Image (cartoon, rainbow, N blue to C red):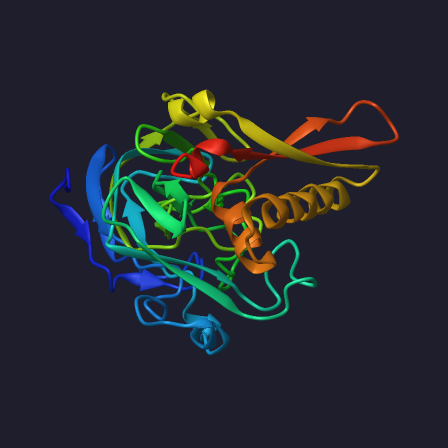
Length: 313
């Protein structure tokens, strides 16, 4: 599937952004490259894993990022244009509840795991429930100017762990460059995710990614921006419709929690899922929306569940 002769292998990774990290690959502006990513566990979870495997995760090995890639001619103040040409999932993925992680971590303290088969265009979650695959890169970023090693987990002004599901094939991301050569990295590839990734994991999977990197000096941006050239709604979801729950209050995060809690309750009631399974399904398939932020003192957050997940029932 690779579109370029330049290549980063699955072992070519780091676990922290660092302006002083030696690059593993140097490319010219406009170059295409193929990257073999690891899953977010760094190979610790997969077929045969259980909830006990989640409890035993070495988090120091989590979120490996392929790179860094030095882009010749890239200078602080420039913009790195990242065109996502193709993203091809491996055969398996996983979704986990990791203790201490996720929007509702205080309500879900125990480890939980679902391993997915990714052989087709959709993956089975439970009897009568399938999730359409829409692969993308969770981490796309460049090194920050601040000295030292910086965690991969939080997103930054220069990108990184954006977890933005629209950054799949056909999208173009623009990143502000802070260091010589940009020192680009990619990883945390997801086979499917809802807007919000509320439990902290999506369908995490290793993938083959093809990208084109170009330096732009005709742009000036302060934070990541991106272009999406495909419909944001899949036709089957539009045809089947949605069920939405809401959270309403003066705090956006509290309202977000409420909307997800109410969606979990709906999935338990309507589809007989366990709370853990419902929470995980929210993370991989439910889209959060800020419905309004103008009618003080309360704001509205909505959680949209696409009904095409259940067409097999």
